[in-house]
Image 1 (tube, rainbow, N blue to C red):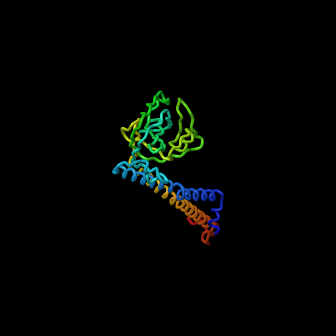
Image 2: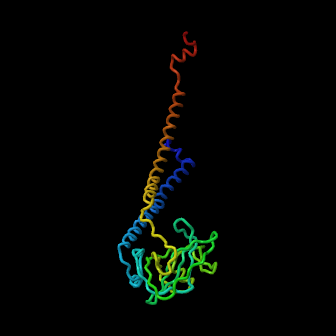
Image 3: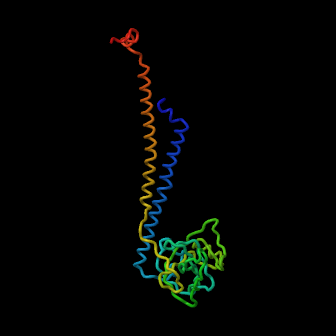
Length: 270
């Protein structure tokens, strides 16, 4: 028991707490976070791939009942109605194809009386970060081909504001835009496909790749296993070193035999 009493020293206790905490974080937070992102990415890719083989259907059919769910995201739809004039909202601090952009949201009144937010695409800032001139959406009744998207949600400290003559937001969140504009918007929005009325720069679809999340998740699991094993190795190495030190001290304290005592007293023969 005395051999392992050194483990109760503050330095060893702190090291043990750090290792246990790190391993716990790997198994309960970091690995599940990356593996969860891998699962959600695979689900998204599957929905996008499936939508490419489907013909677009009327959006009003998805808006009935409880409305679209995450399983409906990226579905291709047709929307008939008209854009609301002078109602553009800009989404700032966006990146499209690795370059800064503003995305343009415009409410769209459907023929059935409901109103849905439409992401018309993106425009590039001018002279650094200034808002460029944004083409107005066409008037009159039009038919749009688009994809259903779920609202992104919001974050504290990122409130809407007005600048350069436009309402500006940090997220595409239909409920936030509805509260800001006073319009009764659907909780989802539409992202325009290529060559649609009112369309601007087309936002490309995500690449259908799983990404590095699975390998990252497995790495965090490996780190969670290796950390306690490393601690165990250090404990074993310390015990081994202490045994060697104790054995050396015991050898140094061994009393000399009779021949050694005589040699010391009378001197060794030459």
